[in-house]
Structure formats: structure tokens, C-alpha cells
Image 1 (cartoon, rainbow, N blue to C red):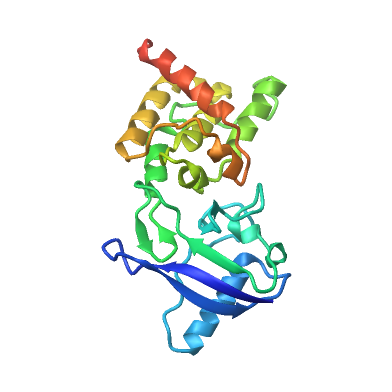
Image 2: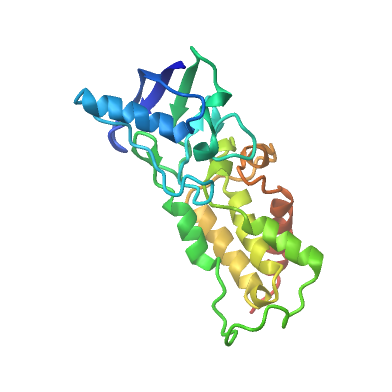
Length: 247
């Protein structure tokens, strides 16, 4: 299939940036990133600078393949990362717009690559368990209710890609932060530092420049792991409770 690509090119944070148009031949069985690989090989052969984009596992696990495809974070296929998107979702002759994630807290490094270290900073502020829990116990030594375990697992599936931020009109990281908080709150080991964790992570989230939750719900729709906005409701409840509790 022959495709027209309109791709965002930007040398660095200080560059204004612009859309550039390319033509590429792709096969329907290719993944979206493989199609970009073909384009880059074409550009290199023409002595032109290739498109900068992030990738690692290419299995929908790492979350680095963050880009907006035709106005949607990770593309048109629901519950899928960009690396899992295949070209059979497009038709011969289509024009595809490809841009980086847009958010104040995600400055563009180059082309489609953005700096998402702000999400790492939120995790470093409290998204971990630091109390001494002793050596690893047997799997069934600490009973966890089935509903609690399932809730924790669902929240833990967040890969930190930032699609929720890119989808939100206010550039909010509430879905990401709430998923990380809810995951640990549902487990016995995470309850010890819960209130401190909530305060530190929410405070860091604000310091990083993320906007407030808009209640639009686009974050859940565009999330490749389909994380529920119920996590955001839980985080609001946790935060209000933590304000009145001192550890």
C-alpha cells in the first residue's frame, strides 16, 4: 500500500517545529513502527535525517512508543500501543498524521520523542514500598481478598506511556498517578505508607506542571491498557482522607 505521511519534525525544544510530508510503501502485515523503520531506511538512503521516535520492547509492555496518530494517542485501535498497531488498519492511499504527545509536562526532545521523566519523578516521590517487610514470604502467607487483588492487578497494568496525559484537554496525569497509588493501596505491604505516598505523589504531580482532571474521560478511552477512571475517584478519596491523617 502507498501512504502519505505528515510527520512532525522538530530539532529540539527551542525549535518551532513543522509538519513534513513523506511517501512510503508499506505491507499490511507490518506494524506501525516497522513502517516507520522502512521510511527511515528510505531517508537514510537519500542522505536525509531519519525520523526520531521512541521504541523498545515493541510488544506493548514498555510504553515508550508514544505518538499521536491521526489525532489519537497510540492510534485508532482501542486498547493498543503504537507498536501493536498494524498497517491493515489503514487503506492504500491514506494520509496519516503523526505527532508527538502534546503536554506542558512533556517537552519535545526531537521529532516524535518527548521527555516523560515527569512521570518518573512522580514515582520517585512515593510510588514504592520502603518499609522493612523482611524476606519474601510464601505466596499464600499473606491473605489478600480476591477483589482487592484483582483491583490491584488492574491498576498495576499501567505502563506509564503518558497517553492519558496526551488525551486530556488539561494535560492531567491523574489516571497515571491514581493507578500507581491504587495498586499499592490494595496490597497489605503498601498500606503502611499509604497516606504519606498519596500526599507526596499528588504534590509532585502538581509540581511537574500537569493540569487538573477535566472529567472528560478521554484518558480511559485512549489508555492502551484501558485503566478505569474509578482509580481517579479513589485517589480523590485517598487524598482527602490523607489530609487529616498524620503519620
